[in-house]
Length: 430
Image (cartoon, rainbow, N blue to C red; front, side, top):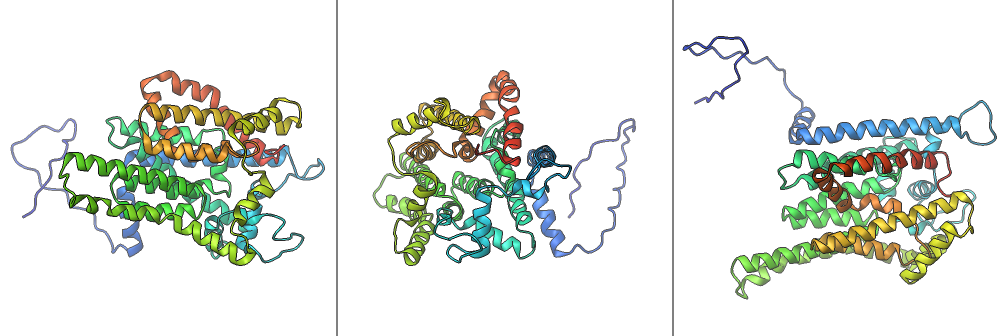
């Protein structure tokens, strides 16, 4: 028995009592398996997802144009009539470490660099492994890195939009808006570069979505994969654990409170230990190669002054380097950005605590503690990219108060172009 769904009438066509014959479906040839998979994937994308992806592609084009312009405005070497190559604009700082790890490993030497002097063990292996895998198909290392970030970023913004829109009547608006706030954030250039932020978000945000759908095994597996990319995966694991404990508590209050049911509810907690496995395995690997259980931490200290200091000391050192005329203006403005990003993080943490968003508060608090207890603040603007409660919170706030979006677009978003030029022209660190 075939059921025909009602269709909208064509404007101007008079109604008749007789049913109209169904229009024959167009003939289709056989669809290859790959085409069917693409159709199923496209079918899962909502109109809001497609809006987010469209915005994502436009912002990628904008950042690529910024890189093109910087190749002409700040050519490599002495000023002349030959611009720098476009790809060279992305071969900056941490990217060099990632390429070296993917190409030579952690301990094999390569021309001109001692593997123990460049502190490459400070970088987790997840991104270099992804880079190595893509390089099998894409021979150029920089292009391979940009592709990893491009695809990962697309996954990340869709996941962020779904987190922001979940369970809300205005989800079709809050989701794309959260993605827009992220894509126009000052440090957004690092989502396009061959850095870890896009890949981490592509794993961490789906992990959070899986947890919100109570799929703890999937959430733990994705979180473990995120931990191979950044140490922040362990902070996400802590947030997932708090989320699970809250769920267990609410279930116990709503249902059977007998002792027999409690062990069954606690079983998913074992999954929360899984993200620690990659970090432990990397620690054991470094111990076997260097004889040092703290090789990763010691590399952080040697290369980036990430030895422990009290939050007051870290703030004081950062403030003096930002405004005490101890650094050149290029370095000083970088420290000023660090202070602004840390202030935003502390304010975000306060809001989450007031609203009793305990899992998200744990994630942000651990990030702030790790970043705010070094000799000085370092890489805090980049870290804001992975603070998904910041972008979802701004989206929800802006829907209640129109001036929030206007202030962000007018005051904050222009810094995106400034920092993109700063990065692609080679002036990010001074």
